[in-house]
Length: 94
Image (cartoon, rainbow, N blue to C red; front, side, top):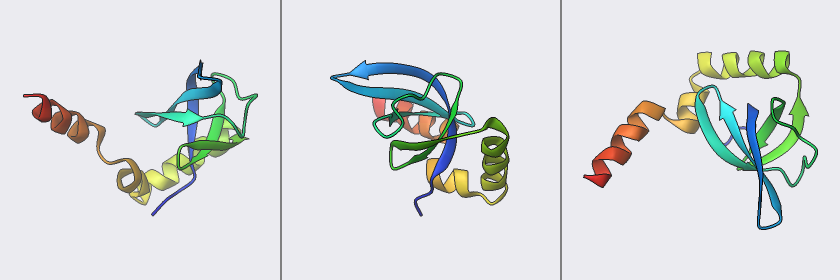
């Protein structure tokens, strides 16, 4: 299932003419394209779908959505367990 998930912008940079952000989804940080929300700023919340920020969202709504997604197990389904992923990545390096 693909969700549009709220996340907090924690960093922004230009990559080859494309504005990109590091977005924190409750502990999981992913790279996100800001082409559709070019004026998003660090500290703001955005709704993200398949790697693209689609719109800004206020913090209260973002936190409520993240809490509900977590209760329903949808964040785990969408992002997996970050500790499990890190362990898997480390094993691949050995």
